[in-house]
Length: 90
Image 1 (cartoon, rainbow, N blue to C red):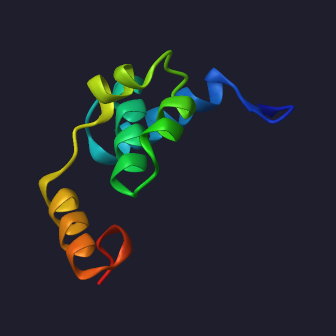
Image 2: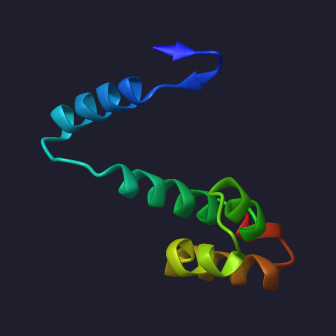
């Protein structure tokens, strides 16, 4: 299934089907991609790195599709900056 360090589409589809079976819903792979990009941003990965990881031509593309910052994450970061703690750490 995994050859030379690469994951085949067969492997991805098998995993996708097993997750769909567990949750009882159909999934689109683009949703997983978007969730991955959003999760990286939510966890503080700089947008430039997320853009590179997603192979976007520009950061504007990343901002368009993945910069859906969650209100709590933004507020936590602002609070952390005011308190002098990086990335909203308590």
